[in-house]
Image (tube, rainbow, N blue to C red; front, side, top):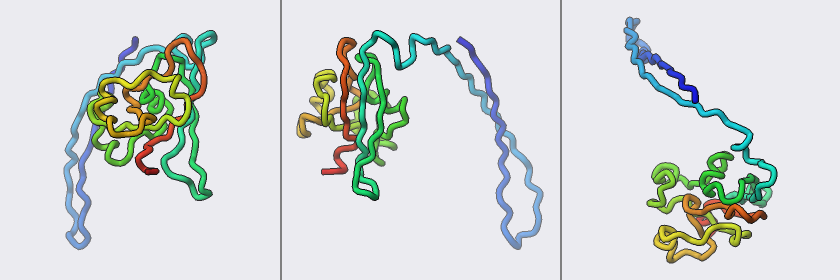
Length: 170
């Protein structure tokens, strides 16, 4: 594992107001040190591993486009190794509505803002967790929390179709 150190210098100069004449503003440096660790990525960690079952995912957008069709994004994951939330995050697929972007718990299962609807392939996911039973007790059975949903079970493969932010279409 490699470690790098970065130092960031920031200067602050207020804008001059028109008509206020010229002023000399002093640069106020502020340094902030950040340490970053990098782990090497081996061929074993790549998403497409030969011999391991893979789950294909399709994510349907929450709102139709100008042509009336819903946008669809695709991703793949090795069966049983990732949470649905992590697959979406790794593939830069939008998960949260506006409120959830600001107030999500970061995947801890304590906010209920990462709701998705499983349109097809429910049998390729884990059963609802106790956390999901608590937050989704009055919601349809097809609704899940992405932070609690494991994609596959290490033995199965197939396709899962997910509706992102289903509350927008209701």
